[in-house]
Length: 114
Image 1: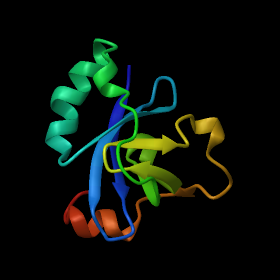
Image 2: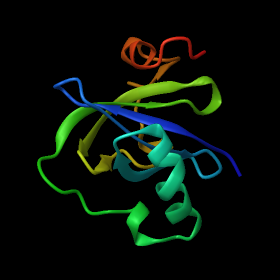
Image 3: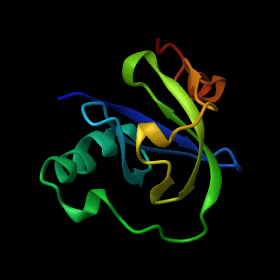
Image 4: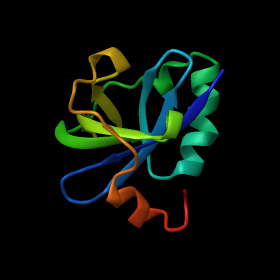
């Protein structure tokens, strides 16, 4: 089973974190304030198939940029509330707008990461 960090950048520059399930090529919807938190309780909830990893969106849903470090990294446009990714959740739904690599905003948030 493979997993990777997911980062979501909102229009105001806020970055929220989650997980990408590489085995099924799906986004785990829950978003939290840190990568450590994503790899903590979100990962445990995901493994347990707990509803906490799949929350209903709370608050406004916004246009965002979604980055997954899986498979060398890629990013794409999406929609999310501050607590959950809304779309796309399945890799097959990610359109030709997907870009290989890492967006500059992720590198700025994590200097020194490959």
